[in-house]
Length: 240
Image (tube, rainbow, N blue to C red; front, side):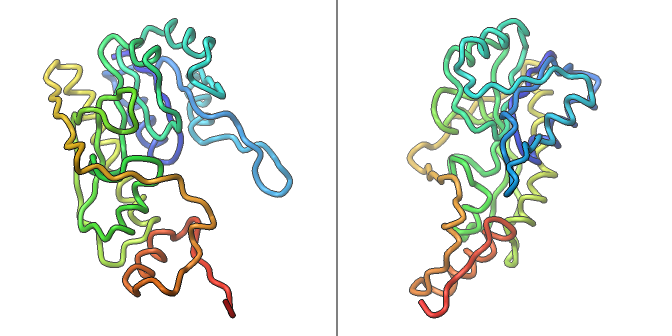
């Protein structure tokens, strides 16, 4: 199938690489976030996804907003069978969702409908969940509330950190995505509505979220320290 990829991050990179390595699919283009100033010197940071795509001679687009007319027109011109979205950071409008011939799918690092939003991995640890996983869903105009195509789960370890769970889910992600693409290609992909009444939502993490509130129970502080390792980290002030 002919695929356009929209995404960022390590799990996105692993999944993009898996698609590129397959013989069944062709990546027409990659859309990722613009290069941003980074560090004290403000040097532009180029994403690993962009570097990978360029190394494979895949066209790269970095619109500030995917709703821009130029961005939508460029997507239309590629005429993809599938649009794959992983941690892109923007909600796709109907004008984009209507473009692919088959559908638009998203890989999310939680067992939906739990932990919709920007930081599902940390949220799973903070909530004290004993299981989590990755979910491939059909994208609609909402926030991570589309019908479920496929999911894989794993146990959360008692000593799990945000970093270790990210690594484990990062290994599951490409497998879940490639299996979903196989189902879509064969015309046998299931579609299951989420249990929306069970949905929880999480916001993007800020550095200030790592401040320890010592009035909280010990088990919560333990989860906070583990969830926010290695980023954004936790901190406190003494005295106060």
